[in-house]
Length: 258
Ligand code: IPE
Ligand code: IPE
Ligand code: MG
Image (cartoon, rainbow, N blue to C red):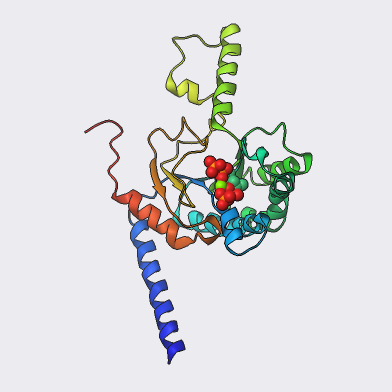
């Protein structure tokens, strides 16, 4: 009897979720969703597991949410995977995080190719370990001809470093006469950022209850809608993504107008 009740409840929940998915799909879906995937360490700690167990679990969620975002018709999904400040962590954890892309892509890349996903990366490639870079570059190259969801990894990414790099390149171009102060509009400046091929995020999600940006897309998030949840990244599921989109669709974006 108890099991039947449970089954009935689960079925009912999944029907509810399908209804909610149908509803959000009937309205404009945010084109670019950016996620600060936070809380892996705390997820592991709660289970008395090493922090890296949380990162391992978090990678599975990346797979699930990528598929789901693709199904919903999201055009770009940017995932904050490693910040320029994350090098401060213990070497063992950093090493694990640097190995994660190759492990993840080894199993996931065929599926990404199959599902028409294009892999991209923003961040400073120059100090990534060679094996990490090789795995990411392979994924970028072998999905370059795809034209479905853009899965953009922010890896060794820091927004301030990105802006400084852009300013340096503007200065170089100014010296050679390619640009001058009159030509430097917001749009032109955006083209100097690592996100130059992407639209700005419409929706920012951060998990784990932290209400901050931690040096993530400071320029690009100027008019994004923010949605924060206490859910830890390894516990993040389709239902939470749906909730974020529901909230997004109820917001009125004014962009400074009335
Ligand atoms: C996010 O989880 C993953 C990375 C920053 C690489 P954390 O590792 O920051 O998890 P918490 O915040 O310590 O719980
Ligand atoms: C932000 O999370 C970076 C990533 C999710 C990759 P952190 O856990 O590093 O941020 P802080 O230290 O809490 O600000
Ligand atoms: Mg954290």
